[in-house]
Length: 127
Image (cartoon, helix red, strand yellow):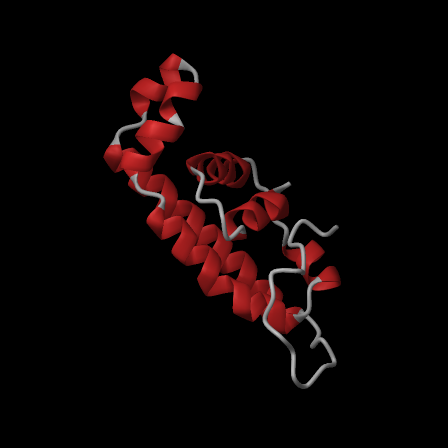
């Protein structure tokens, strides 16, 4: 599930606060897609996607979350989610994703292709 959310963040036509929010919840519950990525994603793909996903997390600011997320979550959660808390969540998610990717890159196999083309075709959800 966490791999699917990271994959969603990588979508070129999508920058959705719900993905960051869901990843925050998944990390809070101990999710870790590292083993899946090691088995299914070539090292080169992980290296290429790492900075892309971190940039996406960075651009999903509180203004976007207030407009696109807050109206759709439970009122008690909405009340506790201010700009400072949102920034903490984004930093925590970025920290976890960075750690997952670093661990996977360190242990993943090469694609076996010398001229690997950077593409979003490899699915970080493991499909």
